[in-house]
Length: 127
Figure (cartoon, rainbow, N blue to C red):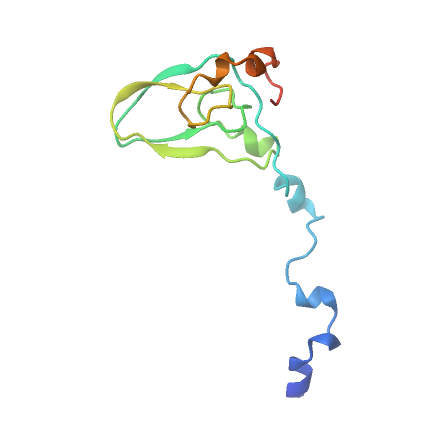
């Protein structure tokens, strides 16, 4: 039977025992990287869509989705470490959703795609 002293003496245990979170060098690290990838330019113009009031949408953050401007799960299968932006439409209306991924008002277009920086970038490349 262990005495109380053995439980209270952290120095007697290894440093690995003190930190229950292991170094993520396992298979998990390949699927969930510590440093997320950068978003890539999907298109250089916004996409106009009609949002329906009360409906929840998932806007593609990574730029790799084949269903722009919405997420198709590409961020997961390409191991980007990014997640889609989930939002709920407050009213039914037509909106321009960003596809250059450089907007300051995600998921809505703010005109950043007109900038020289975005226009010079290759589609599929990070800014």
